Image (spheres, rainbow, N blue to C red):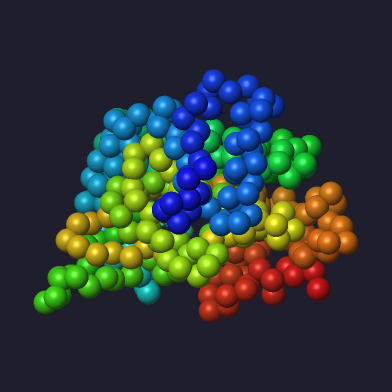
Length: 307
Ligand SMILES: O=C(O)CCC(=O)C(=O)O
Ligand SMILES: [Fe+2]
């Protein structure tokens, strides 16, 4: 495992040749679990499963969507007052083609079938990757029995992001915030960017830039997984910083607990050394609490802390 760039990089490019349970598989499980515990994130090389052409098609189609007039996008677009360079569009359950078509039809009633195919195909590939990563974490924590129901009780959201290049300044080397530092709240996020901008806070308190590479994804653990693991897994803080004259595009797959399926720590993860940290909670309720209290840094501890 290489940690030169500040966060671990794990190579999944020969995963298809590995038998689940083999020594090679177990070694990857350990690397994934340790990365999630120590860093809350890692880079994963998955290039044999994700052709560069698919990545490019998805980015090209996203650019066309963002170029549509605001009125066309308004039914879906997310903007953030404090992050004026940012906008994003989101599709729930994008591994289902009908959902992707309903999403593009909202903005482009005459269809955009090549883009729908690309988004749907990428979502399926990343969903598979997400399930593998989750399985590896569960196996390495010794709680694999919970894996199937955990997957059944999850939802997914696929988002494409655009960050406008910051307005030029006289010195022209200034850096502007694209997206404020935050932890993701969900289970796992798997993200790709076309140009630099993503930065991750290391456990030592230093910000590291992630270099973009097609077929390589950044995986983040979110607060829901941190809570479920009884605090073992760390959720890494990250942000987007914009520099230079280019707009930036990225896309991410977010897995999250389904409404009505409580996030509940397995009893196997509670012992004298690891007292229960969170009471069972509903993720959607927590999201509503978080949105109502955006200034809190430790909202999950306050919302669902067991002590
Ligand atoms: O666009 C990016 O690179 C980061 C997006 C992100 O962190 C988020 O949406 O949670
Ligand atoms: Fe994030």
